Each structure stands twice: as structure tokens, then as C-alpha cells.
Amino acid sequence: MANRSDTKIRILDAAEKLFAERGFSDTSLRLITGRAEVNLASVNYHFGSKKELIRAVLARYLDVFMPAAAGQIQQLQQRQQQVPLEQVFAALVEPLLQLNQVRHGGTTVFLQLLGRGYIESQGHLRWFITTHYRDALQQFVSAVSDSAPQVPAAEMFWRLHFTLGTIVFTMASADALMEIAAADFDEHNDIEAVIRKVIPYMAAGVTAPWHTAEISAAG
Image (cartoon, rainbow, N blue to C red):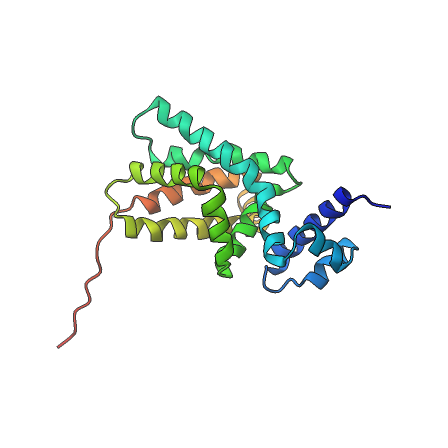
């Protein structure tokens, strides 16, 4: 008979896979309990609610990623006063790859889950992340802002969300992209190579010249 720890892990593993595949909104507790082969009472006992289960799934990755990312950025800042944005983004690569040690394919799964949270407007996840990982998140945002001081705060808000969308889409389609690159260009990549390819693109987008669009009426 499985002990309570095994049951909790089975629930987390099943929920993680379903959330990544179907999204948070379209994944019911009934689906999760069926995949995990547990009853609803077990979910309520270990997590209390679906929202708490969603947060627990993300926390398995965030508890590893956030401290590691903050440490990498801090080391960069100690070596140079103003860190180029491309280096700030590159500092996240190793912490992201460490997530493969949490779960097989953890890097991709984590970014898919994070993307689901934004796409489906899971406001409680934004609260959870900004509350529980405030210091690490602020360190990253400050490092990005310091590397592109010419970009106003409101514009930076949009560009960082565009950046997140770029990396989430890239990771969601990484297998297909790698297959196409291999077939069409005889180029063989792994997940790390894909992440490093997208970094210069994201950095260029965030630091691109900005302007306020002016709309004039024809007349």
C-alpha cells in the first residue's frame, strides 16, 4: 500500500503532465485522480484545492530555479557594474537546465506550465510567484532594467511579456523545430542549444529603439 508521500508525488506527477498537455482550466480534479489512481479525498488532504495543487506543481521547479537564477545574476553583477542584457538572459540557462534533474524534461515542462499560467490568466499564480519569490524576481527585473535604462518601465513591461511568450512558444515547439533543422539544414541541436539560439533574439527585442506611435486622421 502506498504511503502518504508516494501518494502526494503521484498526484503531483499526474497533475503536472495533464496541466502541461491540456492547460489548467481544462484539467479537472477527476482527470488528475484518474491518472494518479487516487481518490479525491487524497487530493483534498494533501493540497486542499485545485489552486493549491497548481501552485505546488510550479513550486517543485520554482524552488530550484529561482535561487539558482538569482545566484547567477548576482555573480554577474559582482563582476561588472552594468551587465549586457544578453548576459543576463544567458545567466538563466544553467538554472533552467538544472530543472531536468527535478523531472525528466523538466526545463521544457516548467516553461510550458509557466506559459499556461499567463495564457489562461491564472491570477493566483502571479500572486504566488511575486509573493513567494519576490527577491529573486526583483533581482532579475532590476538587472534587465539596468541593462536597458533607455526603455521606460511601461514599455519594459510589454517587452518582458513578449519575451516570455517567445521562449514559451519556442520550448513548446522545440522538438518539431529541432527535427526541421536536422532535416532541412543538417543541424543537430538539443534543448540547451535551442535556448541559447533564442537569447540574442530576445535581447535585441527588449533593447530595440522605442517610440510612441502617432496616429493621425486622414483628412
